[in-house]
Amino acid sequence: MSRAFAALVLLASLGPSSGARFVQENAFTKEASSEELIMEPFGGFDLVAPHTEESLDPTEREEVLSVPDKCFPDPWAAKRKAGDADEEDVNDDGRNGSALLDLDLDDRFKNFKCNRQEYSDFLSMYGLAGKEKDEINAANFSYKTVCEKNNVIWIYPAEDPNGAFSINTNVCHRLTLWSGTACSVQVRRVSSVKDGVAFLNSLPPDSARHVVLGGHGTGQALAWGSGMHRVGVETDKEGIPLGRIVKFTKDFKTISKVKKPVPSGSIGYVGKVDNAKDVMVFFDGDLGTQWVRTRDFAGHQVVGSPMTDLLDPLSRVLQRHGSIFMDSCLSATDQLKPNLAEYVAQKVGKGARVFGSILSFNKVDVQRTEAWHADIKMSEEFVQRIYVNGQARCPLWAGNVWPGAEGNCQCKTDFKCATKAGKSCPSAKGQTSDVDFLPYCAEPWAEDQCQCQKGK
Image 1 (cartoon, rainbow, N blue to C red):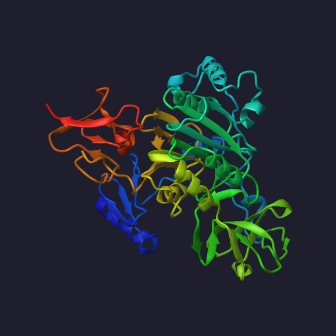
Image 2: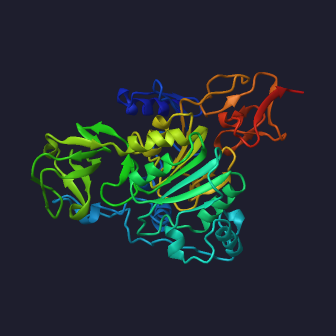
Image 3: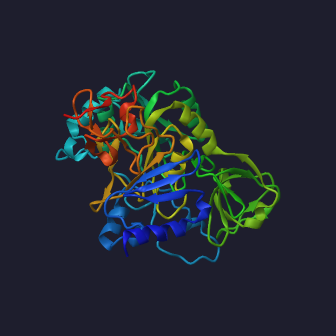
């Protein structure tokens, strides 16, 4: 099948319900009025046959199952709907756990991990020296105090039963790199969406060049605590308010294997609507995670929109053309529209670049901090995806007003791009160029700004 035909097939599969127009020009471009979006593809992926867990060969599947699980602690096994057949659970909580602080002396910084000495230096730099592993993995910590610009904001869940969000040697590597280029780095553990919102509201406006949002995920949501404490895509699906907190207005029983009574007035987070139009709801307390019939939503009231609550302060804090990393399982999955990374890119504004992964993953290979870029590989295949918000703009001296399909601006004909230090300009996909450059590079807050000069 030709790529042109494949793109048309994909267009048809998205259809008018996506509310967006896709253009295939060596990349995807999504435009939706004021919520335009660009997606950078990465090598080797067929547009029609997404590279997902179901399509992996046995070796790749084993690799997926061996990494610390950043997916939700699997609710399907214990709380599957009554009558469902048992099946293999891909996201099994008990798979291998996390290799906490794996300080193999053979690991070197060039392998995107800290060795023992580098980890010790990191602990001292971030004020963590002398602390036990459990203290480190529960701590709020920082490198320097908050600045007016160029901060890195790192939000991880306080509740992390399998250690997928531990401060391991790869996280050490990522944070150490930032200490060399960011004005400050602020790492916070949050137990609820309210905690995350409060932290973001405490920061100066337009002060974050890069934000990490970490939490156990499903592809359309991530958790910052048990029960209702999660954020995700907010949309109506089959008349059900996905991603919102609802109040039920009648008594009913759940349809999970262990049926439980839900009294009128109960409040829960709507996490999933399946093909049978049954709904997974996350309740606080003893109710936990339950399957509910669509008909039991009759008369429900929406009492909360957590993602909306989060996106307002996130957008306020983010610097124009800054970056966001959705450090969560399946945040860029090809199987859900929109996925979590795509949704955040659509809504956050400011021309942000939002990174996610189509699989659960462990190691993040940061290629550069300026115009942040990272590779996430499984079996030597790139599994990261990048979405660029449509408010991205090129500077007046560029050859184009709007970034191209890959998210790059371009110099005018006969002009060459170079940074003020004389280096090639950072461009999309972690590359550099003497013609193309990312809009970020023209921002006054960039460490080494790009400029177009008449070619020699």
